[in-house]
Length: 394
Image (cartoon, rainbow, N blue to C red; front, side, top):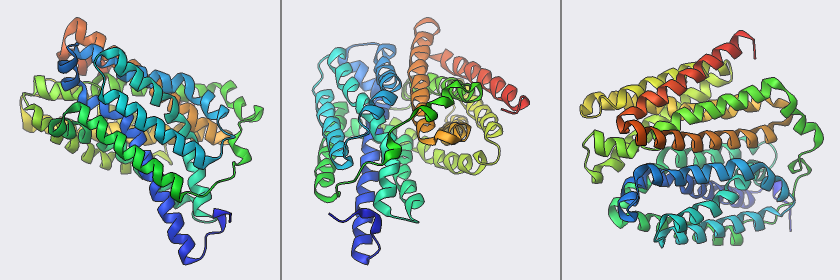
């Protein structure tokens, strides 16, 4: 079979564009599966007859699984031919979403979340390189950008789309839809994707892992953990905040989350523009913005106009920090960027899991009204650490 790296004829260019589109849709489905659950928590907790705090721990389970197993599984599966690997990952996601759809209790749902969490970081860790192979010389940047557009769309719109679907077809229906799309894209992947050779750069060597001995790099990873802990202490329970504190009807919560995601696209652009020049300064700016939004959203929840203002600040800071953290850590580990990117994904998921735990504990002890204060205090700690790193020119 002809190597995809020489795709220069019009027919070959069109085929590689289709292949990259399939990769982007796969990225959207895979990342949406992780974050969809956030928008489903209120209805899920009601039907399974569990507390919102306990329901939130399925977010923790997924995130911690990615954190613990991501780098190891990515390295172990680095030798597997990409077409087979991605097709298998999509089949796993289809099957696990079916299991989630038929869950009768929290334990079956937990298993349905654990299984795809093992596969998600493998896709994250290999998709960019594969997109570059498909696009050919001189086009890899655009190809990777298209893959990350699918990922960004999932981060921004996955939760509200799931919430809206839950109102139309139930939370189980949301998982059935995801399962069907994952199966369809998996079949397309098998039919359309070429067999791709595995690059030697896919195997991390001793020199790459040396970045873990650099205090500067480790500090950047710890800052990512703290940042995502702050963000997801509040964001995990945003749908519940809107419904219970804001008095917004369950059928309209999805549209509010959609607006939160849409304004987040502004943050994605701003974060990408600022991070290359001053990554730590960008961290401070967007942490302050997100913190102010999280702090204000809870007391302003009943006043919907002011709630919108708070959500704008929160949404811009929230989405910008995804981009800023990823680029910042990759810059800090410039001599092993692929490994640095994978480690930041693990760090982010550590924070996501911790945030869901901290938020659940806060709700249990102090009520839902405490969420904004707790999240903002953690964000303030992250700001202090970022400022100290700036002072030490880290």
